[in-house]
Image (cartoon, rainbow, N blue to C red; front, side):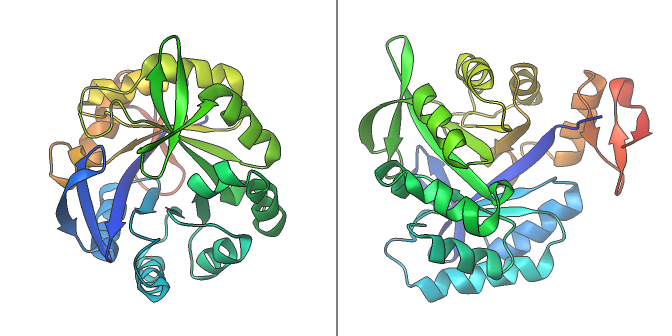
Length: 266
């Protein structure tokens, strides 16, 4: 049974976790390693760290917190933000990250996907795609959602996958931080476009929103504010999802919670 993944996202600036709305009005949310361990204890399947100040802070700062997170986690985690070369990607994985995500640099140099996949394996390369709705479709935006590219989102997602991205981290910038729900139409269209796993991001506010993302075809649901500030706990989210017939991992290695909250074994 393929289980759906619950993935807290932690934006990191200056070595601290922060959260805002559409990457603005940022508030301090805690220490990366401490929050990572707490989420692991709550039952998170994976974690994603997006270093939103990687281009301005010293590289040693990122090395410090990535290594500290790796020391305290046994679940997979992804690091993204400011990765512009395969050498940087390899360094981050060497520090203990399981995956790296590529965004702005890959839009400018699409061959970065294949270079990183060749060194690290396709399973370690995530295409982080930020999009805004435009008329009947979606446009890729970069640099924290500030810069439009003119790229059709679905075409870019297909290209990223064909070049070596093993997973798509898909963020609706229209929904990010609003807690108004994921863009279901975007998820349905993306699921039809590629066969690699798709992680929904941008807009989680309730358990129903996460359920809708999975029902639209997402393999994982990423959320930040609802977990950082205690609106929902991962355990209660998984119990509610299981009650809706959505398979989630729970209760230790191999334990899967299925329809009606009954446990089976993967």
